[in-house]
Image 1 (cartoon, one colour):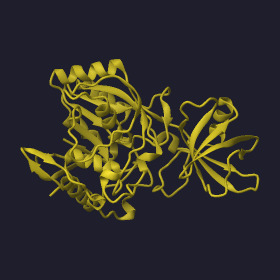
Image 2 (image 1 turned 60 degrees about the vertical axis):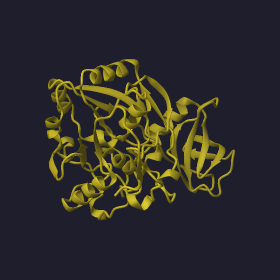
Image 3 (image 1 turned 180 degrees about the vertical axis):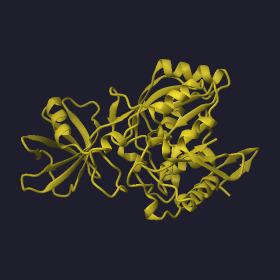
Image 4 (image 1 turned 90 degrees about the horizontal axis):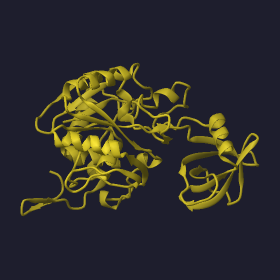
Length: 360
């Protein structure tokens, strides 16, 4: 049973040990490459009201959507955030750009820099004829780094940037990754993510067209995914964990469309945990969504009452991660871990380039 107690018909969750969100995964099930075609990945259906599981090719997701529903996608676009620079000594240094620094003049970015032990404030890191200055150390490998100009930053990223594949993909990025580690609905004006909203990988433009033809709205929101999406929960209990803030935007028109769908009885199907967190961050207690354009750090864990999201499409997540905790809050911890065990038995592919599940 999930940890907690009931009083006056209200279920209260007590502190939950992070080990309750662990599972065993054979390393060979961690997808190192994307599916040959996006919609040929596999889709597991997890029904919260019924036992058992069904597995389809992803393109059959349409069968679980009804006219009048709305599918909400995250249209953020990944940029080549991983850079390799050199100290004047010749030592190679990784500079992983996170986001522009807030409230600081000039082209200053927050970055994860490693190895960081011998670096000092004011030091220049070199990219051929360009450089970046280590302006301020903020602890735990995080620095404020200053580019000479926006033009210089764009030039460095274009020439030296690498697709920021997650650490569990054990290979260097390839030319194809700049296309495949990206959704087909990523907006050219939405550049800003350093990790992809991977549940969206499975959609093709053709599949999106068929979904719209079926009478299902496709609504875009934006959450610029940061490196915190891979941040392990190192605390002993899930309550002690802190989710990193990320910039999210939900427009006036998107809010109106979502509220109209809900008012007519349509269901909101969130594509990915980032869409879930954007929607729920924008939700009022009465279940309406309001426009937003700000940093969000909503941490969804068991006991959370979902206000907007009715169904969720999501990939398979790392053990002891905030993303696994989120989907467990939506479908129940025991149900999700049982589904993961079944997915392992069926040799489904896990993590960013892996397969997906639809929770109904």
